[in-house]
Amino acid sequence: MPPVSAPERIVIATRESRLALWQAEHVRSLLQQLYPACRVELLGMTTRGDQILDRPLSKVGGKGLFVKELEAALLDGAADLAVHSMKDVPMVMEPEFSLIAIGPREVPLDALVSGKYASLADMPPGAVVGTSSLRREAQLHARYPYLAVTPLRGNLDTRLRKLDEGQFDAIILAAAGLKRLGLGDRIRAVLPAEDSLPAAGQGALGIEALASRPEVAAWVAPLNDAATAACVRAERAVSRALAGSCEVPLGAYAEMRAGNLYLRGFVASPDGTRMAHAEVTGGLVDPEALGLQLAAELRAQGAAEILASLGS
Image (cartoon, rainbow, N blue to C red; front, top):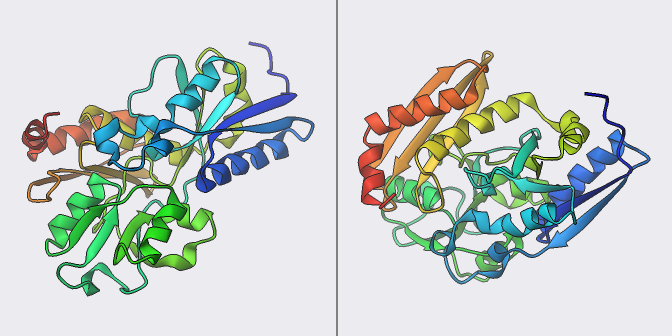
């Protein structure tokens, strides 16, 4: 295959939330450094996930609602690539699309944001914690069954406003989004993975393009971070194997340790009363195989029964 020539123009499809625009601007800056003569443009879009704010994601179709419009822009040629938070990308992608790069990871952990309390342990019985995630909700119920967990939707600024208005005593957000927007000072505590295991892909940015456009994959190949990509691919394999979606409280988190992947995961009932945990370690050659191994371990620990009870 002949060398791919430098692009003259790249159009990036992005959601129009402040965090999504930051992510797209970040990728645009990196591409402009790679190709100084290239015009890199943003195509801002509003997705169904941004429009439906009165119901939990698990009730309206899951996180795929955040990517469908962006994928439509790829299909009709309006955009060359789309930038996503990896935790928002469906675990099973349509064959027309390909994840062509996964960038270096920001802090992948969850964060406690509160004007009143410095930690979850400080919160009294009945205190209200807001979260958009069944994964977080299940872990909160399991560790702090006396707290009231309430659904929280909206973009990051909306969630912070609701907290500041007193609708919640604390909220749980991804630390990565807060840090990327310069809001790290709002974080009262970063929750260790032992307390709140992250979602598959949390903290990582993914770049998607049409599988039929190898030249686009070649353009962005320098933005791929091999270590992060291996971790995220292992995590996504766990979730994919266990029918992971917004409707299943499931966490999967891989770290590099001494040149190997250390992968942890859990599946739980939404109320946190039933939970299966497992962990595995393996090499970088086949991250997806390690993810499948962890999924099998979780089934052996009772995940299959939990999933059956959820109707998965």
